[in-house]
Length: 233
Image (cartoon, rainbow, N blue to C red; front, side, top):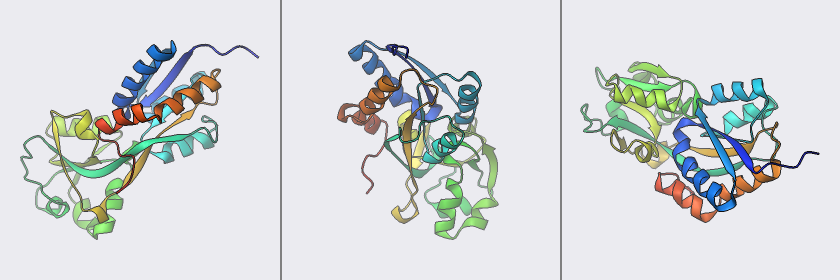
């Protein structure tokens, strides 16, 4: 067996990368480990991992994405740990020009809504709208689909929509360009941000140590500063 190298190749979905990037910097300095962070859309990253059969750790913003990756043989079963939760909210541009204050406001005439059809937010609009019994009213105002959190936020940045279904942590990631409108507790959806070890890793022990590091109190605080939640209300 080859000795493990003191280096890690980490793959991360874009919207969960900011706290991970900070954690990697600390881990690298503290343990003298070279860490290469590759950021992108989850499906693109998984295709890359499958093609080149390389990598050590994969992180994304929903457990179902790693369920699929496990089924495809890309993630070691039993290697996953949750790094915290994000809570569903309505995201609007800074200044909230459409004056959205509640879920019912999304049912109004001429309101433009963006939703995700891939990535960690896939299906969240349906979960929220169904809980409220407003599925038809909200669906008719959905004007744009996006394939990931970054492209969803680009709809806000380019003034193509008045609101999107997003995560509370978006305000920590994009503090200058968006505001959050909280949903009532009974309508909220939570999803776990998770990290797991890639099946092709040649650094399994080091990857385990890195994921343990991500769940340490100091790194949980970094995630919390960006809006991640570690205990559901």
